[in-house]
Image (cartoon, rainbow, N blue to C red; front, side, top):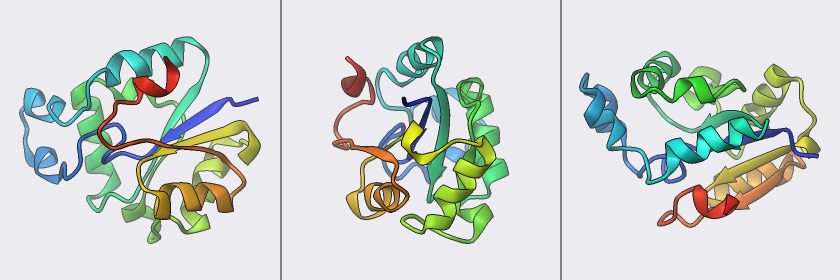
Length: 147
Protein backbone atom coordinates (compact mmCIF):
# COMPACT_ATOMS: atom_id res chain seq x y z
CA UNK A 1 0.00 0.00 0.00
CA UNK A 2 1.40 3.39 -0.97
CA UNK A 3 1.62 5.74 2.00
CA UNK A 4 4.28 8.21 0.81
CA UNK A 5 4.46 10.16 -2.45
CA UNK A 6 7.72 11.85 -3.43
CA UNK A 7 7.91 14.47 -6.14
CA UNK A 8 10.72 15.83 -8.20
CA UNK A 9 10.58 19.62 -8.23
CA UNK A 10 11.50 21.15 -11.58
CA UNK A 11 9.26 19.96 -14.41
CA UNK A 12 7.00 18.02 -12.04
CA UNK A 13 5.57 20.40 -9.43
CA UNK A 14 7.14 23.52 -10.88
CA UNK A 15 7.88 24.67 -14.37
CA UNK A 16 11.41 23.92 -15.51
CA UNK A 17 14.34 26.26 -14.93
CA UNK A 18 12.91 27.91 -11.84
CA UNK A 19 16.14 29.06 -10.17
CA UNK A 20 15.45 32.72 -10.97
CA UNK A 21 12.23 32.65 -8.93
CA UNK A 22 14.05 31.57 -5.78
CA UNK A 23 16.04 34.80 -5.83
CA UNK A 24 12.85 36.88 -5.73
CA UNK A 25 11.32 37.96 -2.42
CA UNK A 26 7.97 38.51 -4.14
CA UNK A 27 5.63 35.65 -3.20
CA UNK A 28 3.50 36.19 -6.30
CA UNK A 29 6.63 35.77 -8.44
CA UNK A 30 7.45 32.54 -6.62
CA UNK A 31 3.92 31.21 -7.12
CA UNK A 32 4.34 31.66 -10.88
CA UNK A 33 6.78 28.75 -10.86
CA UNK A 34 4.08 26.25 -9.85
CA UNK A 35 2.32 24.22 -12.51
CA UNK A 36 -1.48 24.57 -12.78
CA UNK A 37 -3.52 22.65 -10.18
CA UNK A 38 -0.46 21.98 -8.01
CA UNK A 39 -1.83 23.40 -4.77
CA UNK A 40 -5.28 21.81 -5.08
CA UNK A 41 -3.72 18.43 -5.95
CA UNK A 42 -1.29 18.54 -3.02
CA UNK A 43 -4.15 19.45 -0.69
CA UNK A 44 -6.32 16.61 -2.03
CA UNK A 45 -3.50 14.07 -1.61
CA UNK A 46 -2.86 15.16 1.98
CA UNK A 47 -6.60 14.96 2.70
CA UNK A 48 -6.56 11.40 1.38
CA UNK A 49 -3.89 10.55 3.95
CA UNK A 50 -0.74 10.48 1.81
CA UNK A 51 2.52 11.76 3.24
CA UNK A 52 4.22 13.96 0.65
CA UNK A 53 7.91 14.64 0.17
CA UNK A 54 10.34 16.04 -2.39
CA UNK A 55 13.51 14.47 -3.78
CA UNK A 56 15.22 16.99 -6.03
CA UNK A 57 18.51 17.66 -7.79
CA UNK A 58 18.09 21.37 -7.15
CA UNK A 59 21.42 23.16 -6.77
CA UNK A 60 20.37 25.94 -4.40
CA UNK A 61 20.85 25.33 -0.66
CA UNK A 62 18.02 23.22 0.77
CA UNK A 63 17.34 25.84 3.45
CA UNK A 64 16.66 28.41 0.69
CA UNK A 65 14.44 25.92 -1.12
CA UNK A 66 12.40 25.20 2.03
CA UNK A 67 12.12 28.92 2.77
CA UNK A 68 10.64 29.46 -0.68
CA UNK A 69 8.17 26.60 -0.15
CA UNK A 70 7.08 28.29 3.09
CA UNK A 71 6.73 31.68 1.38
CA UNK A 72 4.53 30.09 -1.31
CA UNK A 73 2.36 28.48 1.36
CA UNK A 74 3.00 24.91 0.16
CA UNK A 75 5.56 23.74 2.71
CA UNK A 76 2.68 22.62 4.95
CA UNK A 77 1.79 19.87 2.47
CA UNK A 78 5.21 18.23 2.72
CA UNK A 79 5.26 16.34 6.01
CA UNK A 80 7.62 13.78 4.47
CA UNK A 81 11.29 14.26 3.73
CA UNK A 82 12.49 17.09 1.54
CA UNK A 83 15.87 16.03 0.22
CA UNK A 84 17.97 18.29 -2.00
CA UNK A 85 21.07 17.16 -3.85
CA UNK A 86 22.80 20.26 -2.50
CA UNK A 87 22.55 18.93 1.07
CA UNK A 88 23.60 15.33 0.51
CA UNK A 89 26.36 15.82 -2.09
CA UNK A 90 24.70 13.35 -4.44
CA UNK A 91 22.30 13.55 -7.34
CA UNK A 92 19.57 11.36 -8.70
CA UNK A 93 19.71 8.58 -9.80
CA UNK A 94 22.15 7.85 -6.94
CA UNK A 95 20.61 5.48 -4.40
CA UNK A 96 21.93 7.70 -1.62
CA UNK A 97 19.47 10.58 -2.20
CA UNK A 98 16.52 8.17 -2.22
CA UNK A 99 17.82 6.27 0.83
CA UNK A 100 18.03 9.53 2.77
CA UNK A 101 14.34 10.26 2.09
CA UNK A 102 13.19 6.73 2.93
CA UNK A 103 15.31 6.64 6.10
CA UNK A 104 14.04 10.05 7.28
CA UNK A 105 10.45 8.89 6.75
CA UNK A 106 11.01 5.36 8.07
CA UNK A 107 9.17 3.91 5.08
CA UNK A 108 9.76 0.85 2.91
CA UNK A 109 10.33 1.43 -0.83
CA UNK A 110 7.28 -0.64 -1.80
CA UNK A 111 5.08 1.80 0.16
CA UNK A 112 6.27 4.79 -1.86
CA UNK A 113 5.57 6.41 -5.20
CA UNK A 114 8.16 8.63 -6.93
CA UNK A 115 6.76 11.07 -9.47
CA UNK A 116 9.24 12.71 -11.80
CA UNK A 117 9.64 13.98 -15.33
CA UNK A 118 13.10 12.63 -16.15
CA UNK A 119 13.52 8.93 -16.86
CA UNK A 120 17.31 8.88 -16.41
CA UNK A 121 17.24 10.45 -12.96
CA UNK A 122 13.82 10.20 -11.32
CA UNK A 123 12.62 6.87 -12.69
CA UNK A 124 15.90 4.94 -12.86
CA UNK A 125 16.67 6.05 -9.30
CA UNK A 126 13.25 4.94 -8.06
CA UNK A 127 13.50 1.63 -9.94
CA UNK A 128 16.92 0.96 -8.40
CA UNK A 129 15.39 1.46 -4.96
CA UNK A 130 12.37 -0.78 -5.77
CA UNK A 131 10.01 2.17 -5.33
CA UNK A 132 6.83 2.57 -7.35
CA UNK A 133 7.23 5.30 -9.94
CA UNK A 134 5.39 7.45 -12.46
CA UNK A 135 6.98 9.32 -15.36
CA UNK A 136 5.11 12.60 -15.80
CA UNK A 137 5.05 14.41 -19.12
CA UNK A 138 6.61 17.81 -18.39
CA UNK A 139 3.71 19.55 -20.15
CA UNK A 140 1.14 18.09 -17.75
CA UNK A 141 0.27 18.91 -14.14
CA UNK A 142 0.41 16.35 -11.33
CA UNK A 143 -3.39 16.47 -11.22
CA UNK A 144 -3.51 14.34 -14.39
CA UNK A 145 -2.10 11.37 -12.46
CA UNK A 146 -4.81 11.32 -9.84
CA UNK A 147 -7.93 12.24 -11.83
